[in-house]
Length: 141
Image (cartoon, rainbow, N blue to C red; front, side, top):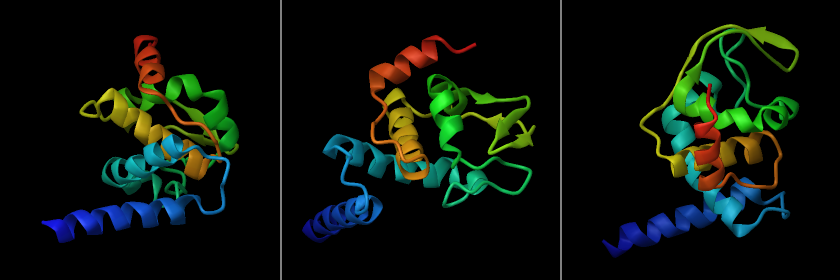
């Protein structure tokens, strides 16, 4: 039991160190959110968007377009939770494949995933708060 606990803590410390060793502008809370978000990303998003957020050809868009992430920050929670359909432009490329949402994610889970995506793939230095996600989800169309 203690071995599993220590292994988990060491893994978390190593993940934080590897994930953010080059970015000393992140707060501890942002790093914690991103680390938890990485696990959720692997479970729910990586199949389509890739391990490095590179997307899958013309089928699934990359998550590395910093401009897209910044300009659509207020819509990202809705996309993750509810999915989306219709054409979007990411990195100058058009994509028109429907994306299923992940309605099973809690508000805090959505904040974790979005923090991971925007810090790791989009070079953001801030995290999404649960309150911010709640407000975004209220505003979904």
